[in-house]
Image (cartoon, one colour):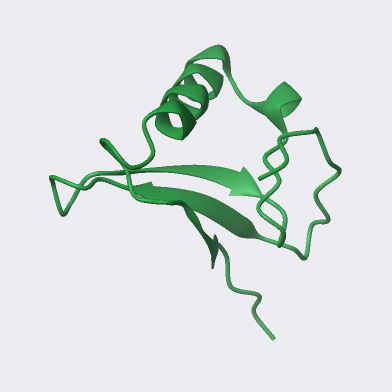
Length: 75
């Protein structure tokens, strides 16, 4: 999982979701591109801290993250 900043295209709406291993309703999600790259420079300080924490505790508190569509385009 590369965390280098990337330019997210407006049509590419994805999120990187870390699901809690212990609480079904708890998860942390962050904007990303279709490859799971999170633009760290565009996150707030709190979101960046949460992202780095979630990455550090994968397998202990959170499951391996998955990339999911985050928005739906209307036609």
